[in-house]
Structure formats: C-alpha cells, structure tokens
Image 1 (cartoon, rainbow, N blue to C red):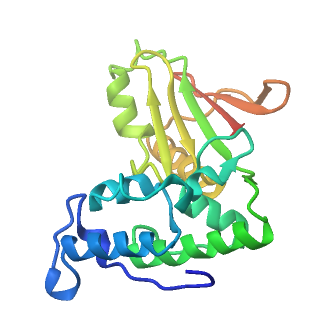
Image 2 (tube, one colour):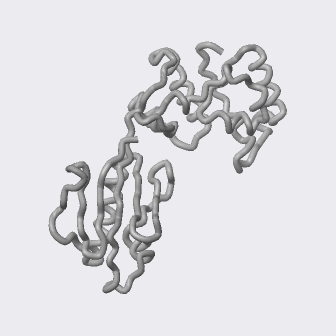
Length: 233
C-alpha cells in the first residue's frame, strides 16, 4: 500500500535451508493466501531479486508483472550491471546496514523503493561502483621448492571467500585475480599479504611500476608479480 513501511520477516523462512519456526509466524499456506489477497486488492509487491521470493511462496504465477517492482532492475551500475542490495543502499544513503538479516533487508529495500519512486521519479538509478582488483601472475617457482598451490595457500589467499567482499578468479595456470568490492578491504588484504611475505623474507625486487597508462601499478617479488588496478562496473 502507498507510503507503507511495514516490515515482516514471516515469509523469509519458507525456502533456502533456514529452519522454519511457524510457532512464531505464519505457515507458508497462510502467507501465500495473504500475498494473493493483497495482489488482488491492487498492492504492489516490492523486493530485491524478488522472483526468488515469489517462487519460494509459490505465487510467481499469481502476481501480474505490472504489480511487481524488482529493484535490482532499477538500481544498476554505470555499465548497466546488477549490484548488491548493500552496495545500492550504501551508495544512495552513505551508510551501511547489517548484511544477511531478513528484517533489515526488508527495511532498506523499502527505503530504496521510496527513494526510487520519489527522488528518482521512477527512473533507473545509476550507481558508481568499482572492483578494486589485484592480479597475481608471472609465477616463477622452480627454485623455491613450492608449487603454485602452495604459494596461494601460504601467502595469497584472502581470509574470507565471501563474495559480498571479494570474488576469486583463478585460471589454474598463471593469473590469480581477486576483485574486492571495497578499496578498504583490498588495502587490508595487501597489508596482510605484505606481512606474510616479509615473515618469509620475500620482498619487492625493484621499484613499483606504473602500468596500463598509469591506471595500475605492478610489483615484482621475484617469484611472482602483483598488478593492482580498478575496474569500473
């Protein structure tokens, strides 16, 4: 309904591996009936990647497309790609919120909806986002007694593999690329790797080199090289 900010996470436990406790909420059948009735009364269903939620409830064929607002299609990157809910919210409102919390997800989704509907007047909102990358390559390990896998696990793997933080791309041969969503997370990773390398007496060979027309930097560590750069999303 118009101007509503109702938050109810009753429906979030119907699918996805979470354990349902229907003593504290509605059964999926009651939830399905409620959503169907609201749609019949003309309500607009708003969500982030809402197709998954509608399928989980079994109402994906009940809701007309003109009564659905999927905000992943309204908040996109400069190049028109989808982004994360937290990225859109952080870019628009300049603040964070607790990730992986269904109640907070519902609240911030409605905040973004009101922004899109009122401030953006229903137009697509372009979000300026970058990937902050580091590419480890040019591995020369013959004299070290270590395999490429040894080097990755001992020195170069990040502490987290959470794709909300970093995306790993490994070709298994030469390039091991990490794409961080935040510059601060990449900076923290670089400091961690620097400390790991120094503890094993591995230091840069020569000076930092500007590459890619000055848009990136490269460092030679003797056994491998690092290439640090950014990608506009």
